[in-house]
Image (cartoon, rainbow over all chains, first blue to last red; front, top):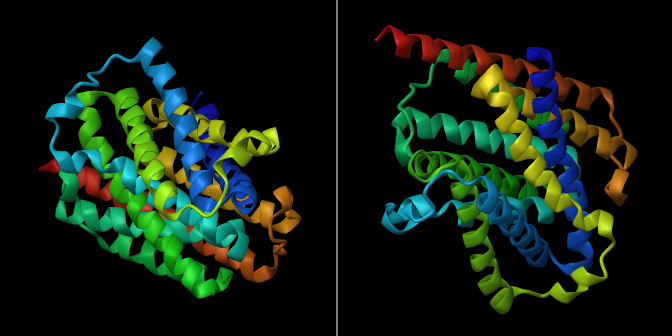
Length: 142
Length: 155
C-alpha cells in the first residue's frame, strides 16, 4: 500500500510538469496572463464545486483571518505566470529545476526563522549539502 | 535571456514556498478545500485586474483553443488530490520528495521528445549528471528533515 502511495506522489509531480508544458503552448496562442487567468478561473469552479459537496471547514474564517494569510492566491499567480513565460525559452526541465530550487531554499529560510506562521526548524548541515547539490545540478543542466 | 528566465523562475519557486506556508496557516482554521478555493478565487480576481491593465492576449480565444490545452486545468487539481491521498500514508516529506522526482523526470522527458510542441532538448550526459545531483540533494533534504523532526521530538 505504501508503494502505491509513492506512485501517486510521483504522478502528482508528473502532472505539474505536464501542466507547465501544456500551458506554455496555450500561452503562445492566447497570452501568458490570459493563460494564468484561465487556470485560476477553472480552478475556482472546480474547487467551488468540491467545497459545495465536500467542504467541512469554515470559509467565512477568511473575513476574520489576518490579512497577510489571504495572499496565497496572489503568490500562486506569480508562480504560474513565471512558468508559462519561461518554458518556451528554456524548456520544461530547466524551468522545473529552477522552480524546485527556489521553493526548497525559500522553505528552508522560512522554517529556519519560523516566518508566516510556520513551525521553526533550524537549518542543519544536511540541508546545506542539499542546497550545494542543487546549485551544481542547475549549473549542469543549463 | 536564458539566465534572466531562470532567475525569474527561481522567484516563481520562492513565491510558491511562501504560498504553501501561508496557506498552511490559513487552512488550520479554514480547512483545506476552503483554503484552496480561496486561493483560486482571489487569484482569479487579481488576474482579472491584471488582464484589464496589462493583457496583450485574447481571453476569448480560449473558446477556440484546442481542448487538450484546456484540460491542463485538471492537472493542477489532480496534483492536489494525489498529494492529499499520499500524505497520510507516507508523510509530507516523502510525498514532496517523490513529487519533485516525478516532476523532474517528466520534465526532462518532455524536453527530450519535444512533447506538446515544446523546445527539444536532448537528454545528454550533462543532464543525467544534473538529475543525479538533484537526487543527491533530495536525499540530503530527506535526511535533514528527518533529523530536525527527531530533534523536535526529543525536546
